[in-house]
Length: 499
Image (cartoon, helix red, strand yellow):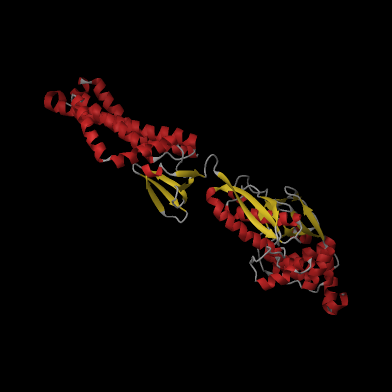
């Protein structure tokens, strides 16, 4: 469709001068007959004027046609498609200048029968005088032509300009005109360099030979953090940042141990991206590393601060693993309102599951009795029922602290999404027996979980309607027979009777 629209636009630009050129050629081809139809043969002077006018129009319509063919078909069609970059405006202007100069010369020689020998000789002398007077301007012009021919830099490339003793300038190449080269720096300001000066600079092109460049981020963690846990958290944090910044097609970052220092173990996070994403990507990775470490109850080693207050970090860092997990589960929507005492019981009855990168945890359409809480790592969630290639078919990202499978374990609905580990992940698996125990020992658990499920929209749309809550509660009692009676008994006796 895009190619068809582009072809229509090119045809619309070419059709006008093409019709004019063909019409003029037809008039000249039929000669006298055409003039006789208009009565022009009766007035010789008028015939000469009309002939000259038609000749000038014919040559200039051919020039316009040739200019548009070269510009839209050759330059912006074949050359731009082959190189993948827009054609410099200077080349388009030079080609137009040459074509119209030829058209003017043809009109003078053929239509008006003028000898151009004297004109060319006079223009040579004038060119010599102008060349001496406009030396720097001509240097800029020819330097611009050389830059376009050499193709060391292209429009849209990210470059670094530096010269011995000068401050370095980093930005994106925007335009090479007759006299100046324009670069937009990282602050968004447009900087213009004379072409002759620009061609003498040392230029580092970050977009060649490939548009993708590599950047490394270094994080130091304490030696007490297990290496596999550090790899899992840092890789998930970096991928989370790049998915948010670039999109779903980003490559998975790599993590390696860079060295052991007095503060702890230094880890290196490597990622590949277009140069325009390198600096924002680095900042985003630092941000998400702090967030993921905080969710895991960790912080960078040394004097670095995380997203929480330092006093809170000191307390949380020395908490046992069960307490860290309790804090994580307490933030999940499905367990909102569940007291800490019962969350600790859930953790005690659940098991940790490690999944390697690329492993499918849940297939869409499956029915099971488990739900999961993400402790570390990232997962993708894709709904296969949506049309392939549609804008809404991009995988959702499941992050630490998120849960999935609630509607399957509690209500019995099949999984709507395929869940796949994007990085190595650590999950907490909560099975049906654990949920049965929670419903039996916690007063009001049935209504609370049903209300949370309604708010989460497990039936399609989030709702706090009482009818939806009651319907979900009935479905939960169907999945867990006897829960309603036990829950009612618990309300009568109080929680102490079940401890």
